[in-house]
Image (cartoon, rainbow, N blue to C red; front, side, top):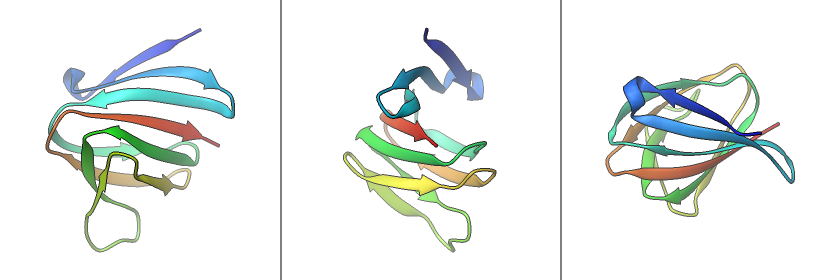
Length: 93
C-alpha cells in the first residue's frame, strides 16, 4: 500500500512504498529552501533536477544533480535549496 505525504504547504510531496531493498519514497520538490529531519539512515538519489545540500557537520552547500546521491544518518537535520522542480528517490535503512 502506498502512503502519500505532503510537506511545506504542498511544495514537497512524496509517496512511500516498499521497494526491493526495503522502505523507500519517491517525491518531488518545488523551488524553495527546506530543512529536513531524518528518523532513519537515508540515501537520497536525484532523479531529475537537483538541489544544493548542507549536510550535518559540513560548512557549506554542495550541488547534487540528476544521478547524484548523498547519505544522511538517522536523527540528523540537513538543509536543501531547490532552484528548479526536482524529483528524488529516497532509500531508508
